[in-house]
Amino acid sequence: LCKLRECVLPCAWHHGAALYVRSARRLRSERERGCARLHPYSPGAFYWQCAHMALTAAVLAYMPFEVFMHCPSPYDLFILFCDVISFLNICITFNTGYVDEDNRLIVLEPKLIARHYVTTAFLPDLIGALPLQLIQPFGDCKYPTHTIMFVFKLLRLVTMKKEWTNLLDQLGMSYVKKQLATVILNGILFFHWMMYIHYQVPVFTVHFYSEDERVKFWDRLFKVNNIEQTSVFQKYTANLFLVCGLCIGAGYFRQIQEHIVSELLLTSGMGLIGLVFVTYLISMLLRLAIYWQFNMNVFKGRLNELNKYMIFKRIPQFLQRKVQLYINYRFNGLSYSEANIMNTINEQIKQDINMFSCKHLVLNVPLFQDMPVALINAIIFSLTQVLYMPGEVLVKSNQAGNSLFMISSGTVAMMSSSGRELTHLRDGSYFGETALIRPGTPRSTTIIALEITETYRQVS
Image 1 (cartoon, helix red, strand yellow):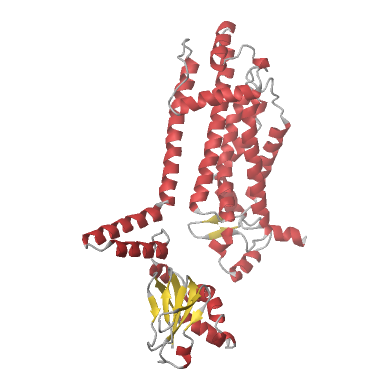
Image 2 (spheres, helix red, strand yellow; image 1 turned 90 degrees about the vertical axis):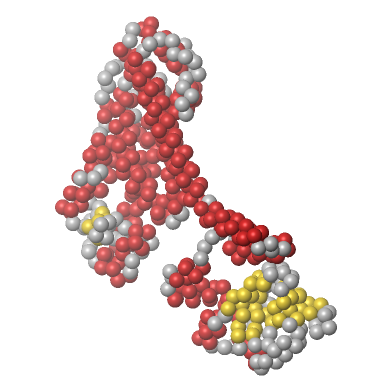
């Protein structure tokens, strides 16, 4: 019973809890509201929605294949089972709370839940759950007509869309990935069901034509002489070819000879609908591509402005390359303002970022290893990041020293006062610790950057 109770109470790991609950205290207060209703941020609600969404997707993928089969049964057990699950989902939804996004409240009152559900998705869910496929306008199983009722099952997409969005939000996917996954799913469902409609309409229409016209119509559209000997795969791929041609505006591969109104309406309607959807699909993909490349395009635009400025100022080529190298390393092909970003986060997060970036460098210095944690933190927060380009001098021999350098990345050469190379220092190394003990002591060596070197500097 305790485990069952936990399934209906809100949990901390649900993505919605971070948006609307936001604190451990409020989470406890939400849990104290009781388990009479299923909380929208409970494990039970989340896992049920995932299972219902998976089952809905499976039946929506399965039903179009029914029309391609020879003598399909209207009492298909899988479809009837999914109808029962859909009715069960309606009952569960009437007992599941919802989020009032306008007031940012979680509603668990039964009357408010029922009123909200009835005014939103109840009618589509109810029609989509009805076993309308049991209705057979015509009894000829070779040309099934009960399958035309499958179109009402598409109303389940109203609920499936919410469950799909909930799953993607829980997975923590980025905006581009969520939209791309949604576009791909929409494209698959659209073409899959367009093939069903493209096949179902002629199958239904043949009941209104004479035998000769029906056979000619069937022959021309599907390129088969005996429908019973044609496999589901052949019918499906033939319709895929025809539907793709209609949707991209290419039409059929040969001109229609007979004037059959239903075929002309089907072709015109599918062509227009397909053209609109393909346009939507392409526009969504272009929008995502632009969004994905936005930062890089802004960076390239600013870099282009910088190059024009340097040309205008007649800056030498070697200096232009140095500036470009610095910009590419500093921003890594992206455009952002570090100052603006740091202003949007609180001090504790800033400290956590500094600790992550610099703590291992500070602890590499023996002088700091036995110091208290509070003093280590104070040292980390006082560090200054300095970036050196290849050939730049970090310190000069006989120059008064006043700072310690810790190398985060890059390589420097240590030179004696006579110009002889002594050694190389790389990531994690440090130098200049004497300046912290005796500030003003002359440097004994010269340090030169051999590549782009990122350092942290501690001033005495």
